[in-house]
Length: 78
Image (cartoon, rainbow, N blue to C red; front, side, top):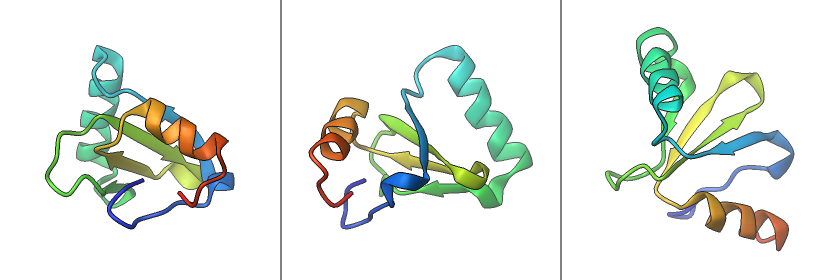
């Protein structure tokens, strides 16, 4: 996930690009209704992907979706 943060890969439901209109709407609704389920791990960088976890948690990341997928496929510590 970057910046020495990690997520157990068995908790990941999906990795998404936040730039599409439906995804931006989804994030906006989460911010209004479920603030406690959003974790911003971007450290102020541009959010390039978000990761949906079990339990409805949403993690914002500065990494590209391809980078995250590659790390998961390579079984790197993520």
